[in-house]
Image 1 (cartoon, rainbow, N blue to C red):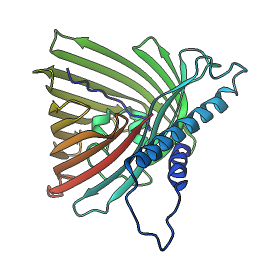
Image 2 (cartoon, helix red, strand yellow):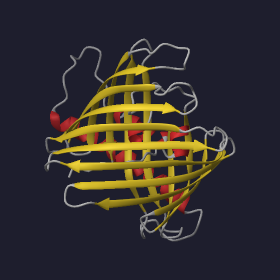
Image 3 (cartoon, rainbow, N blue to C red):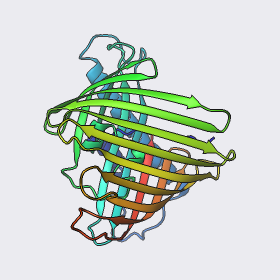
Length: 325
């Protein structure tokens, strides 16, 4: 069965390390012709960049872990789920958006074995509400402003694999808290269902919750279909934000994946049943070994802002390169 997952987290310190790795390349003299570097040189640059990102992340983790005790970081400490991505999005009639994101999870030996540190930069609304990754603004090819993205960090505690608690700070040192519960059911050899419930608290929203449910059916070892739905409500708004998608996924092996999805979303009580719907296709494949992956997304959407506005239509294109470490 094709593996599909939900989740998102997204620190510029790692981005600096990546840029420094490229900055360390020798410059060409003005009178020297520009030539394409031999493949082995490109491999060395990419490997050096990846190692710089990981080393910087581990250096940061060691420093934070040292605040809590004298136990060496090598005794159980690690950096996992690391991802540094660069993306470019352009939508018809709107200015292009460029974004750099960093995702990583840090296991700290001097903290309880089930606790971990998380740091990142992402859409602050998606982070707090624990919006499924498939419904993030980036994946829906929606433009993001600088105000939408913010830095966040905190400490998480996992109680077995189903229950997690998080206390964190986001942009402007605004506190938030989360409690997430997840269940996975394998229904025979070809069907998989996932459920996730997240309760969250912020000063602005008070208490809120996000419910996400997905169902996946594998027609073969390389073809699958999936339905995913999500709703979010808070004490302040008292109206549901909802999103739904259904998609087909075809694997071509070697981490190459083609998908076609139909997406629908809206907000209860706005006078518009569906505020946005559209179709998008995505091609994903490694461009260097199995840890440098490129995604190409193309979509066509029909948004409607409110009951007094006409429904518009727009093409969108997104390109993302992800470095896994």
